[in-house]
Image (cartoon, rainbow, N blue to C red):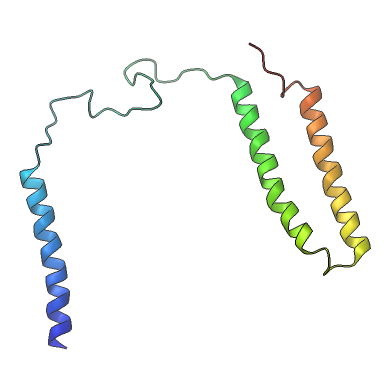
Length: 117
């Protein structure tokens, strides 16, 4: 019992001492304001805080997420082919594919897939 308590105490004391020494010895200074400012993708953090993004980037992201989630729904359909009754499986798969095809046609006719340069 004593050895477990001593090992626990040592495992708490040694990291605490090392963290304290790291804080005391570190050369980190708060003089350089630009160095400690957030850096995101090359944007200057001291300029305009919100830069307008093209709606096409947003729409492509949403389309990607929708069709990425769709893959996670198709996999169980493939795995359950032998388990479920064939008619139920075919109806479910056809209904799901019709929804996906209607979605891609909607995106096509709304010109979400066309890039303007």
